[in-house]
Image 1 (cartoon, helix red, strand yellow):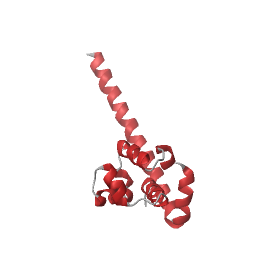
Image 2 (cartoon, helix red, strand yellow):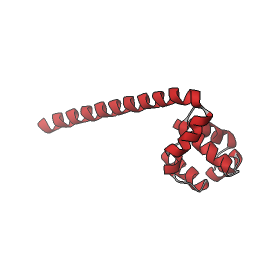
Image 3 (cartoon, rainbow, N blue to C red):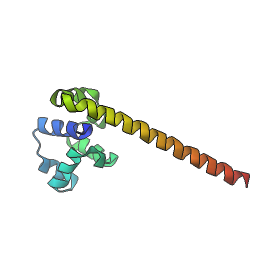
Image 4 (cartoon, rainbow, N blue to C red):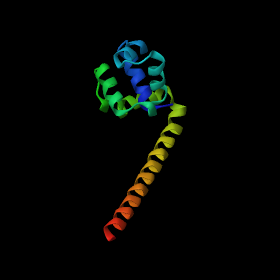
Length: 114
């Protein structure tokens, strides 16, 4: 389950648009677009902005909790496990990012000492 992809699908269906419609607007094939809805990690920020424009929506709406409530109702059993996984992924990514920054600072300090 993916949160943003599900939100995009719900908004697309609510507006009566097909995957072909959105794919055509994005300049990609329908199967490529279908993969975006199924795997939201593939969606770049630029593409997310473009999808929001096509849906006459905003990026904020695509990540807003109100839409999440609809998804939670549809997928109540799976959403809890997904949310825990998502939170853990974010925490781990933050830890990795912090460690990278620490490494860069150490490297720059060594350069300055020389």
